[in-house]
Image (cartoon, rainbow, N blue to C red; front, side, top):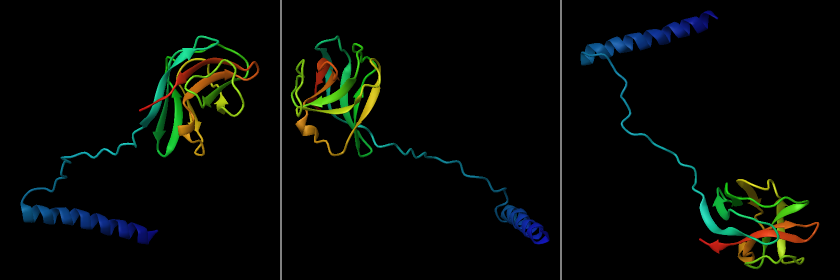
Length: 157
């Protein structure tokens, strides 16, 4: 414990006497230099891959869908104006055609997720193994009744 106090006293002495020495050499007290520049580190920007506006199929569906790339991942995003009708077992799908038929067939789509909300902004991660060149639209689909509520044709950015 005595050694720690002694070391602390020694460091304080160097700082104190170093400042006095600075005063004697320069004739004025040492001052911290104010930074003249700031550096901002920005997050990687999101790049738009494709987007489209929702249209009605079986139920009124509105808003915008877009696929973006951010930090090496791809996401399907619905804007704050997204809205669709309620229903059971409603899923978000990517479909091979630019329009999604009222009743879809196995093999023409992949399911991304159960819908998170029937309105408002939401985001779905797209798995790395999905080739987006094979899908031309996003659909809101009720699996129980094989009914497409609405869809958005995706146009490349």
